Length: 285
Image 1 (cartoon, rainbow, N blue to C red):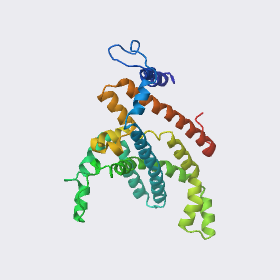
Image 2: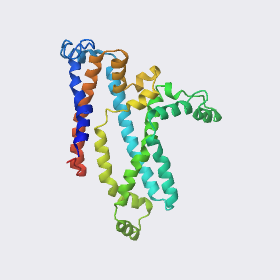
Image 3: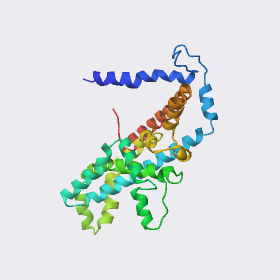
Image 4: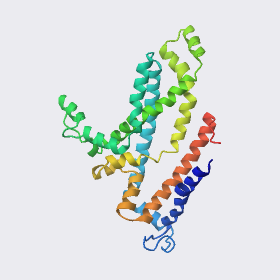
């Protein structure tokens, strides 16, 4: 039964890993992998010498960490609020509405964001004009671009993550709330002393597993929203690799950057699973 899935993994995941040898070659597509000359670590040295390389790494870390933190806080807060709603039809309706963006691709959402954030006729700037605020070029400003990435990413995914935390809330023993009420605890005290401790295992688990994805700042999102004006704050490792490899045709250099990222991601993923096991007793096998 697992053979079809195993074949897919071998063909599309493990097979392409053989191409990592390009990172150590002066790769020429006409010669192919087997006839391109090896040049050791020269591609890695070239990447490290590029003036933008460290800025790209910092951009990736900053954007990913911002998404991780905000993407953890917002779903928890929304799940706590929805848990207090007693009208079931309203609760289900809100869940459906906030869950819908998860199914839309960044190609569609990118077009929507470009329209609503347009400095000339976007709805956001139209509202700002009513309050006497000058139009803001959100997608072309290094000051605003990272915040647009974080907010739009949270908007897209917090509905899906909220479901995870709502499921965790259902596992809390109702007797704990009854005991808290008897002790005179209000809603706020119940949240602090019953709800959040009950959610702690799943919060720790999702936070630690997210550490393994800290270098994945979202290629699809950034690629559909960024422009040369915001390379300083919005260019990440994945878009950097795309431009070097696909646009500039420096395949060896692009592979070297991708291989470096994969090695760091593997380390972070291993650490995150170790922490998930130690802190939340989570195991893959």
